[in-house]
Length: 476
Ligand SMILES: C[S@@+](CC[C@H](N)C(=O)[O-])C[C@H]1O[C@@H](n2cnc3c(N)ncnc32)[C@H](O)[C@@H]1O
Image (tube, rainbow, N blue to C red; front, side, top):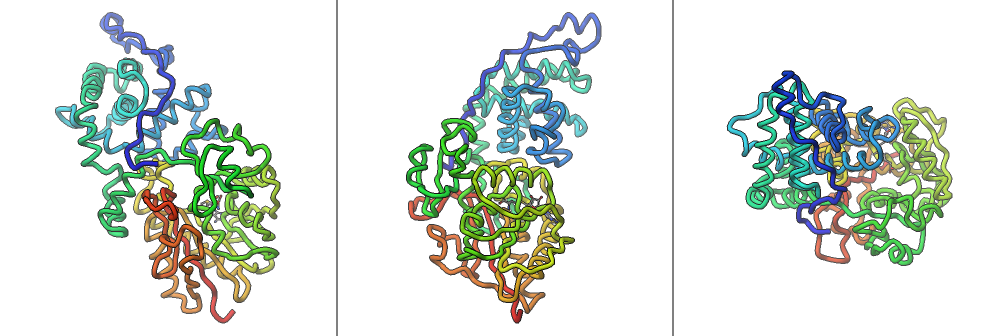
């Protein structure tokens, strides 16, 4: 995987919309393309603009909006091909949000009115297609004009939409490379925090990687070399298999139906290993769904109790375990209220977080999260961690992990806990304990992974951002 921006995403080209019907507009004074009228390719663009606003303005996660069962009605009304197009548009629109915003702004004499949110979303969706997707520019422009005309809030801007997008198309070869070089695709507050945590250069490399399409990593039950060959990938230093370009959708790949592997970023495979040899141990996997870490613990021979408060996510956990032929006791409960009536030999707490470490896959997290969200999540993580420390047996280990790149949810949270709770001890992770991940173990003895690409083939690289620390309660 390179650090260059993602190349054009290939999606099936949509037919251009009808030419704008200016006659009709003049005669009736109504939009030339009334809402509901069919223009080929219009419905997915309308859905994409609506969902983009929901992410940016209502801070709704993209996965929730595009959930096949509970997603946004405008998305659910589309067929599979159009849904794929909407997702492709939104991934690019969010991954390159700042870049696109900057390029659109460069075509305008003055900023759009602050309340013209649907117009802004419409332009953004069209520019994402022009700049980053394999949709003919003329089709993207024509459909956007039709979209403006079909929306009473944007109809008076139809000519502007046309002019701006034609200029965006023209600027592709000149302005785009310059903006990609100068602009970081993240909100200012997040850039500042990444720079404070990792330094300017590393923060920049992290943000550059966020612009690229991530590979898919697999945790395999056994025979990593064999599965690497079958899946068209390679074995990573930690034993995961990495595939850069999938040959088929996940459920159609060899080994899926047989339960030989599960999809899990290589960094996410590390926290369960910090519990050491768990064979025969009574291990609680807290915040377990959809079960990637439960599977690793069960495969390593632990008697796992998997707890999560989300019934729908636990359904996926159960399906995953059944496919893999692995077993765990599954409990639907809020961990803060859960009373299991016993203590565990070891606990893994993979706490809910801002997920900024997964921004390559989920670029919406960069724009849907705020500093206030991070503070709230850190507060929840602290409470979940304190509860986990109550649920472990004397001398037992608690591994705290999450997929955030933010110190407030990782390093600072652990430092704060150790300061306030002298009875809690850090059990430092030793260099060499995790094959291929020694460079991710800090001098403090915790695990901090970041997504930059490294040249050293023996070093795990291009992984999600993760934090993990191993703790014990003293005197218990
Ligand atoms: C990062 S995800 C867990 C991923 C999972 N460990 C894996 O490897 O597949 C966080 C999970 O925490 C759960 N969660 C959040 N707050 C919780 C609470 N108070 N009690 C139980 N589960 C909670 C969410 O439902 C979500 O499934």
